[in-house]
Length: 540
Image (cartoon, rainbow, N blue to C red; front, side, top):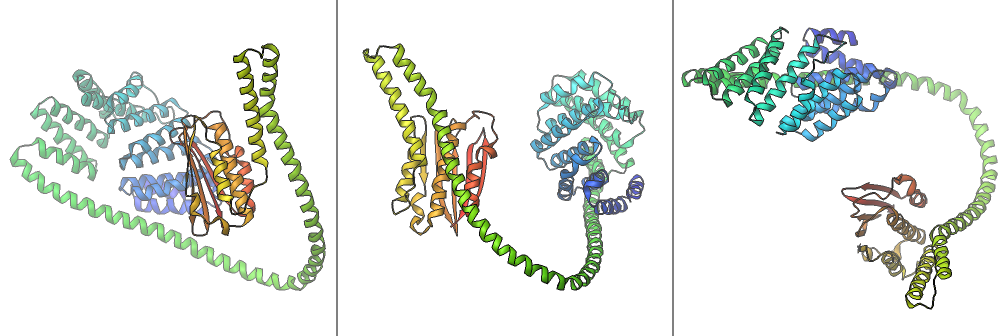
């Protein structure tokens, strides 16, 4: 199937090629076992879509390939996929995303030739952003050498010509490099003439058209516009033919411009119609392939269901006896298991709580107590300054002990719950951190059951405990909302840097464990540019 697709593609029969590429990717099931053919077919489909300006379908197709890039046997599949996605965003004028995917391709590339090509494509994206100096900084080093493609030697001159072409354009756009830009354009043209490639010559003569436009040579400007238009017709490139004809309209005299305009208008209409037909034709090909596959799967499923039904009838009686026996045994076992498990979980919870409190006391107070004792031993407490510092250290130890006690004490869940929750949150306010509480009184806490109120209290407490460790924020906010039958809690702060390299999911595992019994969900993100954020949802 893949061979047929490539054969049609070589003959430039893109509709047939697309049909067989699509057939190939649909047959690659399970895709993990045929990752090369699957990703290769999708990449080829994308290239066809892009030729006809169908960038939306190209993006949708490429996204299907990404989960299987790591399963391919050759990095070229991943490099091509990322490069095609970069092209797609470039054509849609989203240059930052184009740069993002070019850089992903660069990380995957192995050969010097391929890396140089990707650097040239990154420079091309910079050119679209008018960052000509950044593009020059990338192109100049790779233009100094003739970098060979050892796999396909014929690509060597093609790539070098493209690099010199782009470098010449950058010099031209930046200004002040008249001789350098002409030298690049001329060398690029000389290389292209050896390739016998009419399509590549379009760009070369267009470059000279731009050069003579900038340096005000109307006669040579017109000659190069005519050559660019001639080779676009010879290469049968409808899009380039229209673009070059537009430039010829500007470069030629008024009498000829009228004649060119009539041709230009007709070609614009013809191109739009052909692209629309191609888009509809490609859509039909994909739809038909999917429909055929679905019908075949439906027949297979129906046959399998009939066979299963016969087997079920044979086994039904036997299974009934087994189910009755197992059910009786299971009832006795479950009753014993639940009783034993409840007792064990209660003991484990007490033990874990004691260990956690012990560790917290050790981690937070050992050093402070030791330092305070050493201070008292080595300094005369009769001295007023030493006495005040000693008292301050004792007060700090007392404060930490009180906080640990408060964190592990029983939670009040009566009508004072809202007040107690607010006091707990406010207790995290310091001279360096202000906390804003929103929407706390918008919930009817008295109507929420005790287990969920305890869960909310402990979850919020854990959020602030962990935020205190990893965040250097000066402002934090916590918002409570009721969304239909759901409580939504959002924490956000303005931290500007990560205090230590941590695994957020592991650090917040306690919150996740607390939410599981009440079917709550939890998400956490730490972005150095946007702050630290936590999202919690639990049903009422």
